[in-house]
Length: 511
Image (cartoon, rainbow, N blue to C red; front, side, top):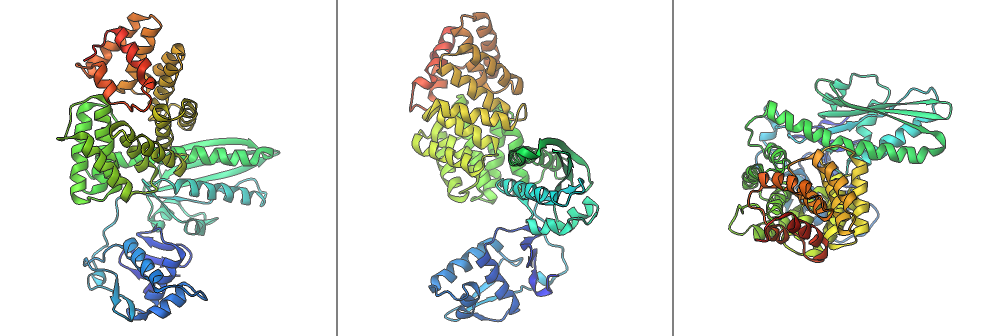
């Protein structure tokens, strides 16, 4: 049980779960936890620097600057106290003390964060074989690790969720105790040499089942089976939670000016691939950035909005969209290092709009490496290679993204990328086939129509080319070859040359 002295404001320092904020894990290293624990134990008294260094680095001689770095990191993780002051006060030349504010002691309920959190519960072993507990726990460990790479939601620490192993408690009560919006649970059953795993995503408040899938495999392929489950679950959970949060915001918090809700509103609009929605999304993101100018997600999505406008040849939203996009992307990378989605959006912006090809490709590769189960990060790494790297590597990334989300939201990105690669290779039949699949996923994505028009024209199917051109002109009436070319990465001009030549053959004007 956590001592009263270890609870403050929205936080609880739990020896088993680490630092929690409203029941959600806060990223804090072992030294940061040891430092905070030492300060809390002294109940507001001054703790000397020597005592803190002995507690945080037992038996190790370190420079005092190391303590300064740890204190700064801890302050950043905690943020300001309810009264706007720092939780940790510096006592010059002596040490530090933890301050319990007057505001903290008031009876008012703490402000709860809007960002969702997920708990992955231990999977039930239905096989009757205790040995399968190790396999079930291993799958859950892998899933927690994979989901923790996503930054759009928080994942409760393993020790917290495993405290409910075998409890039989209602999932809604567990969700309430852990302070999470969503719970992933499951079961494992063995029959002979076969294993069956069932995974289910549940909405925490009402206990509504949002998604379930059964996985079957053999004991002799147990590691491949485990990897396959982890990959599929990690890939599917993020978009399911994101879609649910968008709907929750529309239903429960319409018109909210909270930064997270603004982000959800903008994401819903920017994803339609419609010019007017893109402009509305950018306006929302600017509204959010006025309140939180260093929010990496808002910065990256604003850069994405401007990059997409530039790539599509849509009217500018600022005096200089290129410079504005560059500034947003650089600030997002500065404040969101390690976030796969931030890097994915910014890498494309650097490559397509800013024309910084080497940096853009490096950022996109880092995004895919940071979270190989994030389809958007993977597909955008494919875009990077398509324009500035190796076409074979581009196809490899596109096919992986397609395998991660077959037919799901966003599949048009990978399908269109594969189609474009086939145009580069002169394989126009394959290009038409893949671009047609992209069109079925999202008829508003203009690059799909570019590829369909070009590939059809190269095949001499002018009637089809003209039909797709008519659809393109309904989206962008004044489209020209030059407008499309200007929005593309130009490191290897031949990568877009086949598309542009096909558009000319179909009758798209040069300027």
